Length: 69
Image (cartoon, rainbow, N blue to C red; front, side, top):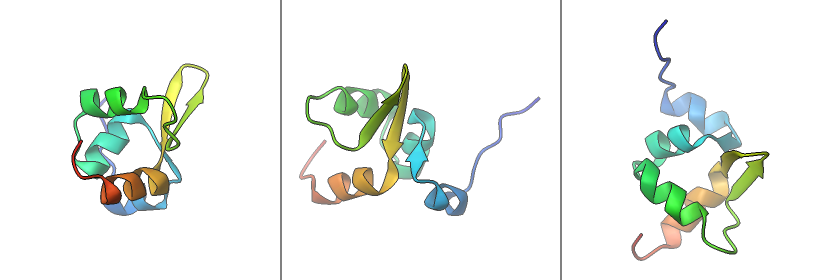
């Protein structure tokens, strides 16, 4: 049973991305995304129980406005 890698076109259609999907979609490392999403006031992350989901559009807006991460 192999791991299915989703294409960017499929990820473009999803409103919420898992940590791994967000890393593939943005090119930002998993550890960096985890650290960023732990910051207070982070509006592009949604926790469903213990599962961390990234709001794709808000994450991309944040990255577009960021000077450095």
